[in-house]
Length: 148
Image 1: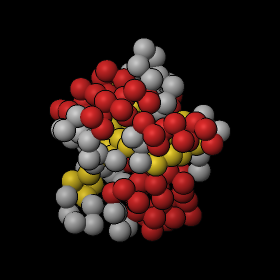
Image 2: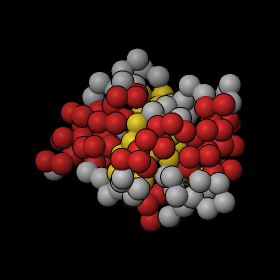
Image 3: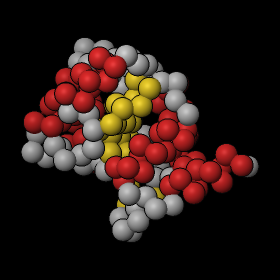
Image 4: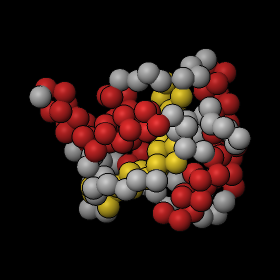
């Protein structure tokens, strides 16, 4: 688990993002990208059970969830999060290499609110986060980052 800097939504509230991926390199990359985009609090998990615990403990504003996880896959994690009164309203964005339309349907049926295919353009991830976090400056900040 790692926690870094903080950011605020358009309403001024602190934003926390839980990133769940079993690949350490992917976690580091997404963490870096989120800090470049948002400078927010990032919490990381490499397996489903840890993700459930962290979601209940920290109540993140959004969860970026890999579907292919060891022991408990992301679909089961999404189902459990949506069945838990403490976590059922947290938006879940599936971030996965599973790109078939059937995979997307399964993720949405399991409770994911959005879907981003790996490898993704940072703009795609930023747009998904903006849809669920209502960050007024997210896309503007992101476009400035790409110009530099």
